[in-house]
Each structure stands twice: as C-alpha cells, then as structure tokens.
Image (cartoon, rainbow, N blue to C red; front, side, top):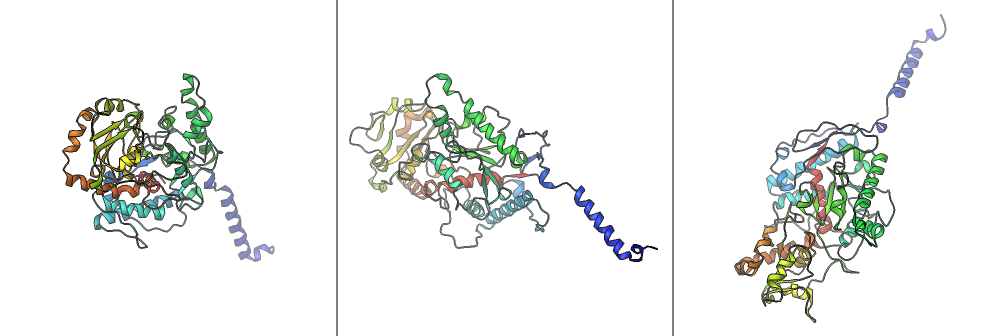
Length: 479
C-alpha cells in the first residue's frame, strides 16, 4: 500500500480542494451577465421581457402615478415590509428594499397624521396649500434620508455637464450644477447605489452651440438635437447595465428650452419610460404628468438667484390685475385685444410706459395675469409668487409644477381662454376675505419656488427632485 493511502485525511482534503476549484472555474460571474430586465409598475401587471438588444433596448411602456393617486392604491395598503439579511442581495434588490421602507414610512405618516424623523425639523409643511401635508412631509424626509442619484460622467462641456445660469433658461444650468455638485447629499458615490440616473446634457447649450446662427428654415429641424440625445443614451447603455435594466424608467433629463420636449420625437419607443423634467409641460404636445416632471420657469438675473421681492401689504395693493409683455402665441393677442391700455383697474400693457417699474407694479397688484406665450410655461407665475401677487393662470394644457403635492386652487385663479373678456368681472366677484386668504397662501408657498445655491430643503431644486423621487417611488423594477 502506498503512502498516500495510509493518510485518508490528506486524500479527503485534496478531493475537497479539487471540487472547490472546479466550482469557482465553472460558475459565471454575475457582473458579466447584464440582462434587459422587464419593467414592472406598482400599479399594473408585469410586462414580458422585450427582446434583448446588443446595444440599448427599446423600452416597454410603464405607468407612473403621482403621490396623491398612489396614496389610494392597493400597493400602499398592502405594504408588508420584510426585514431580511442583506447578505447576497444585488444592488437593485437593496435599492428596491430601501424604496419599500420609504413607502411604508409614508403610509404610516398618513395613517397617524404625524411624521417620523431622526432630528428636529425646522419646517413642517401644513395647511391647505398641500394636497396631503403628512404624505408630503414624510416623503420629503425619506428623500433627504435615502435618495441617491448618479449623473453620468461621459461627455464634455459645453453640451454636457454645463447649462445656462442666467435669464429665461437659467434654471436649467442651476439644476445641472446642483445635481453634479460635489457636496450634494443626493450624489451617489457609485452608480450601484443610485435610485435614479441623470443624463446631464443641456438642450439650451446644444441649441446655442450646434444650431446658431440659424440662417434658413431647415436649420430649425430638431434632428441634430435628437441624434445627440440618442447617441448619448447609446454610449451609456453600452457601457453600463442601468439603462437596459429599466428600459430607461429610472433615467431623467432636465431642460427649460422650448425645444426640449421634441428630444424624444425622433425615436419615441426609446424614450417611452424616460422621465423628462421640462418647463414646457404641455400635455397636448406629449407631456405625460404621471411620468414627466414640470420644471418651474424662473428668470434668473445676472449675478442674482431671482427677482427682488417688492411686494406690498394687501391693503397697499391698489391695482386689481396687471400684465405687461410681448405679443406672441395664441393667447396673448386675445388678452391685449380686450384689455390693452383700456382699464385703470385691469392694467394690461404690451410695453410699459416710461418710468414704470415692472416688478414694483406686480408688488402693487392683487392679481397678476399669467397668459401663456408660444409655450405654456411663463416666468410670470414665479414672479407673481415672489411679489406676493395671486397668479391668474390663462393657459391650456399646462401641467403645473409640483401639482402632485401642491393644491394650486388654494393660491391661484385659473381663467379659461374663452373667458378673457370676463376677467374683471371674475376677479371683482372674489370676496375680499377670500382674496386675503389666497394672498397669505401665496406668501406661504413662496419658499417652494425660491432658488438657493446650494439648494436647501423644500426650495425649488429640492421640490423638483422630490417630484423625480415620487416617480421613482411609484414603480418597481424586477429583481
């Protein structure tokens, strides 16, 4: 008998070592097996997996609900959070478990009409300006505690990672800058930690650097804009697994440029689940309120973060209604035809007379008329709020900012285009007591439209991010 057979323990150890070695060799590494996973909505049946693409996948449709709709859904009523060990869980499983905890906390806040926080809160949203203040407050707390985003690093300025910081498109640059700011509490340290993924291209800069100067009609074609967006998605989808994993449902962009909604027209099936954060939130032009996010349009003066606050006390506001602005789009010509320079109480001007100050006049007015121009959004809405002036919204198909949590009927008036001739009668019919209540609510809602640098809880940047956070809360990816 040989020496090896005289030591059975050695033989056993050698055998076990060989088995372990072959197991390691033959087991594929999970990091190399990225699949296109079918998307499942929290409110619909799971979709079947689309055919796998070698580059980036065509998304399947999904339905995304806003917070006030989601609160009544069976998903929130049936939440039973399971506390499991995180051992051997994928990054996506950990993310979905984290989102489940957030949903459970929001539901508990609604039921208890209270909030749960690890620190003392300096601001507690309450009152009629909110559709559900308990849900909103807890959801914002959960966002601050958990929400992480990854901004793709591919691409170079000025088309990517940089946007305008001033004038009518200024909110676009400020949003991109805040998302990518080194100290942002929402910035993920690794894409595996991210709940959402940001595509940091600037539509305003693409138009400025790729299209201008425009010398002929063909220069207006959006094909170059659409191709840049599709190429960028192609790059990140080929390099990383995240776009294919969700079919773009956990990806978003932000732009205040008029052309931004058309970014998805070139290949609509690619953008079917993609979240667009847009100033031009026109539902008649493809804006989907359950999926897309309205971005407030804010005129940002050079060297400042917003217009000055020159609002007067209610008893010092002698002008019933005020508007001054150029004629463009289908609505303003109607307004000016009926009211331009015709009434001392409804002050409507195409061009302000010399010596008059636009911001001061808003601060002296009870109601500020906010008609749409070529696009549905107008910076006058935010200017009115800053001035303590009750906005009178005159638009069709405008999805208002933060309407998933704010009740606009409590601090604004909506006048149909057909009733423009009746504006004075409509506003005079509002009792003074009701006007005073609305004006106080305008002052209360101001904080949600203030631009800060860096961003602060409940300001306009955080409110936009909260809208994105809600969209992510309201769908679940298959794990």
